Image (cartoon, rainbow, N blue to C red; front, top):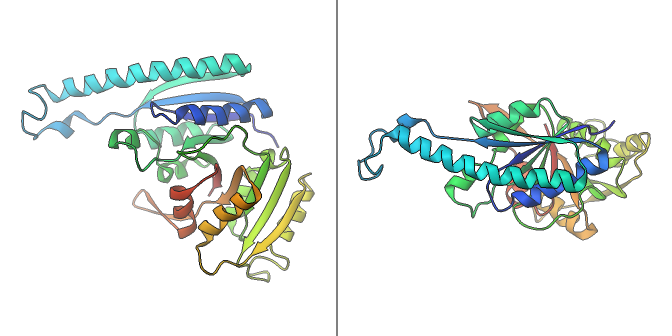
Length: 285
């Protein structure tokens, strides 16, 4: 298994450069084609109708949207120049795409034709406009492809050398491990961690984390099985703490949630990782 197509979501946020670095590094190591996607996400003109005239500065709603489009197009040009420069410097095969539409839905659509989607974690300190420009993981769930989420803080010059797998024998965890195989096969060190493991076939297996480590070994992945008990902190916090303890540069885990009215309601572990991640997280559902 190999990574041959990677989709990178680009935007005008300050953290976009870090995301480009992570995606470019993966593309270089796997010989993958890297597609940079910038989405111009504009509000519909009728959103502005009904506001006091002073708010819209006596301009028609269509004029306001055109101003927003022009600003987004200018920001996209800056992102495109930086992206193409990275392709040239790293000798990567890739392409640039500029699309207007809903960010999450557009990234999900384009993501169906690649092996991996690289996105950025939403920064809670960002402005409302910057948060709106980042694709929601809830929408990306519709893409059917794994996503690699890069934290809004920190530097990640190398991703995928020392990998921690959060294993609970769920279908989502199994999917994440399978989708991450190309990365795991190139990793220097892989650790499979079971937290508060439930023994037996109905739980985490007869030998929690060791069973999946044996499967990985048949794919050429030398993985170390580990277990821990977390009683005072959540499983999500335990995963991040363990990742820090062993110096992991990537966390692989299943994404948990269920569909409800086109939104996703996430379980506690996923919510914790999405808001508190300290290393890039490879997720699948």
